[in-house]
Amino acid sequence: MHLDIALYTALVSINVPEANARAVVDALGEAMSDQLATKADLALLEQKLERRIDQLDSKVDKLSLQLTFRLGSLLVVGIGIILAAMRYVPMQ
Image (tube, rainbow, N blue to C red; front, side, top):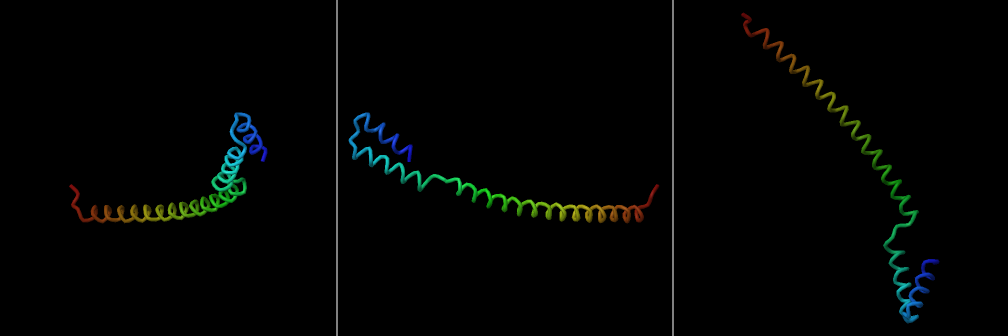
């Protein structure tokens, strides 16, 4: 509200008609209440983002574990194929 009074006073002091100054202040007040985030809005957004980050962290951990198992499996299969090939390939 303090901003409203200061803006109204500033407009009237530069000879803007009172009705127009009041309309500007009202329009600014509506725009600010409709389009700007409040502290409560930001706190709610922060909570939602923290939850989402926690979910993403758990998914990344799960994928990391899956990739580790897959890589281990590929190594075991690859080494097995190499050892089998060495057994059947004649050595000089």
